[in-house]
Length: 279
Image 1 (tube, rainbow, N blue to C red):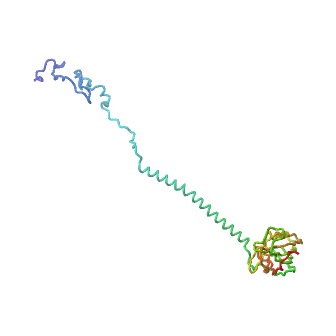
Image 2: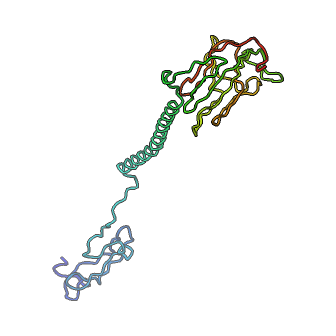
Image 3: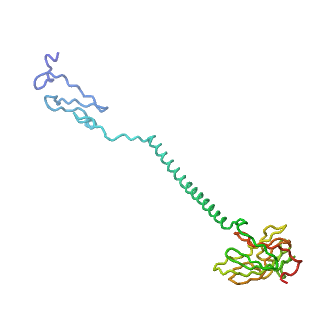
């Protein structure tokens, strides 16, 4: 009935009964209860005295303010799968390019090298390949008689003087025959043209063909027989006399003067009995 009649000591200055003050106010967020502060006034009659402890107030936002939301986006600690796949694809592409480019370059160089070598071989073959036999009419000579022979742009008077079958090398020579014998031919050459250029006649331009030997080149060493006509570069009207030697036991066959352009002259050969060549 206190609200009708009031209670002594419980009214305010206006004399109205306001109820008994509690012994204490409960604590906030687990803090210890605090004593009731009667001095607080309510809205419309003054400021409000908070009963919340200072430690708890620090965690409360100001009255009337909105919660603060951070503008910083959330960054996941795990990599994005699409980005990882893109990086892997780019890395793989670079690796393949780095692997294929050197292979393509090397392959191009190899192909180019084969083409160049093939062309070079064709040119060499064209230069040194023997011309068809019908392009050069070989002169048919006779041993012991001079023959007018044309070799390219030069002309010679050639005489095959003797042909001797020798069973050993020259006296004092260590170059014994591999076949068991030597065919030694003595001849003389006189250049009869006056051209400024001269085509060299070498030991390998002389060939001997028999029933047992086919296009046998003359021997560079010649079993030690001298004077050996290994290389000739005659001036106009100059004459050379000497020997050409074949490592063979054959005593009969055909002697030919031949180069890459064809065969220029041929002589039938029938060697005499073994003896000292040039004697």
